[in-house]
Image (cartoon, rainbow, N blue to C red; front, side, top):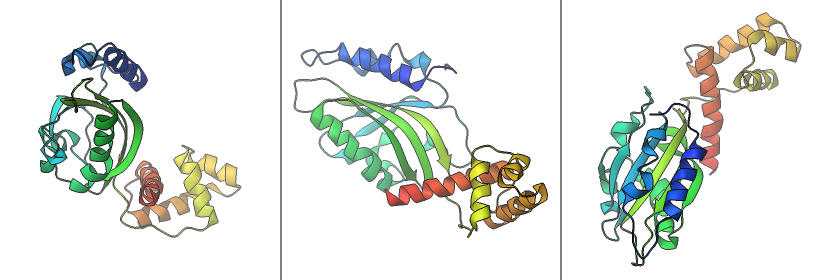
Length: 229
């Protein structure tokens, strides 16, 4: 796997290969991804969706390339192993974030590119996704090709602590990468005060350290965004 290729580069190469196929001579999926596989980075996954009939629960997900990112939160490769959509552990995820887009791509026979923010088995995830349909003169394509690039994965915080204006300011600067000293200087308060507030936030959220706290604070906002969508 390549460590440096951008997702933009990967999707452009896939789109170029797809554009060179014709409906009159339906291509095999390998014709689209053959020259791209070695460009995929550790955060990218590629899945072939075999469209067995009209029932999406019978459509088969076949892994072309797994990601190699490790996480204690969710085993993505195990969760998204070869299976029918109907066998997937989180039916709600499939019915809201996957099947509708697959249906749209099948109906239009046009690619779909988007940033997905959703939830799988209670975990907030975000990823870029390109879906390519087989070009065909038939009523429906025989397959879809989906490639994704993982952006984030967070457990929603178990509790949302109340914060005053200073806590909110500390939180904002922390998630922007500021150190405790930098936060103190920006807000015009003592370094000790910032440290005290950070310790109090860690206790409220159950964070193991400041890095973990920053991740949990970001997850809180992502969780709110997903609930609103």
